[in-house]
Image 1: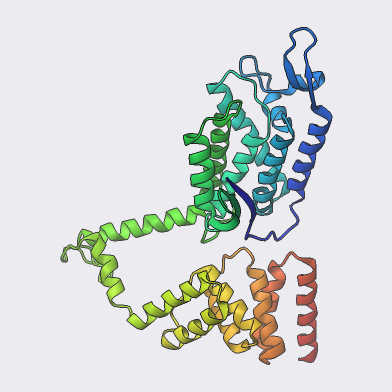
Image 2 (image 1 turned 30 degrees about the vertical axis):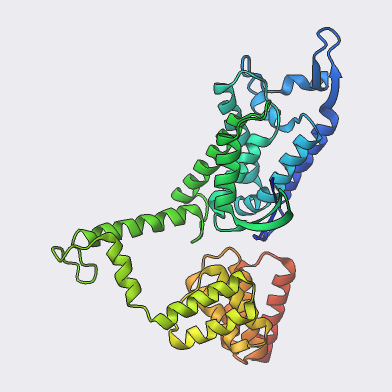
Length: 393
């Protein structure tokens, strides 16, 4: 059994819309749920008589049922499971989309999953799982490389961090809803329709620019893969990317990667591997030392985003202020689209201001941070530091 507990993505703003949806689901559950036997047929029902008209009945559906069914639940574990997933994945999607767009997206997911269920099933449906699946699919697109802390219990009980693309893509979608369709009275097709809506709609929003992307969302990953594919095909066909001429000796696509790797200094390759290993072992101090050594060899080397940020934070915590500032500067140069770049700008600005006596560089970063920060306390700190530097100048 695998149960998600949290993600490693922090919200920039309080996800009030998601909290409101969770509250609405809980309140409606409390007023609508009642296990009882129908007096005439003896059939066991889980909803009060007035609430039964709001279930989705595929054979004779009413339009409103494609929304109302998503706020009804058939038991305590049913609503707890749905609200847990909505809380874990919905907070970050709410933060990314904004409140109005998030609520609209959630309701759209409910409608689409209801349509998917109705096309393939005749049994009535209730529950937020289709809408929650849409939100989870959106999370997969927006944060595919984020880590999800998962509780597992088989013979042993413990926790493990799994990348979102594997946990959601393989465990939640493929295993739970395609391979293991054994549990009765589960609307698997509604789940799959919800995931499809969440993934396709979010990719579409990113592709047309309705939603601001990053270098690490699934759309950016797809575009990078496509560029690499086109490059390999061009080189393999005899195109020389350095001269722009065709007709040069053709090489196999796999040789492109091999030739590039052979040109890299073995010492650099070893250092990068050691940094990755220390990161996995959470030995951040050693990883930071190795990073400083790597920079002495080649300042053009860039670590993956989270590794570089962890190293910069470690250097700052160790009071290695100049090295920390340089690491943050490299992070801003290469990962300027990071969601919380305002906090990084604030950090490097404070380093320049308080420890390195570089007021001009500090003001540059603090002013950039002031335009991007949303947290009130951080914004206040930023403005106070700017006022102090301008006053002393």
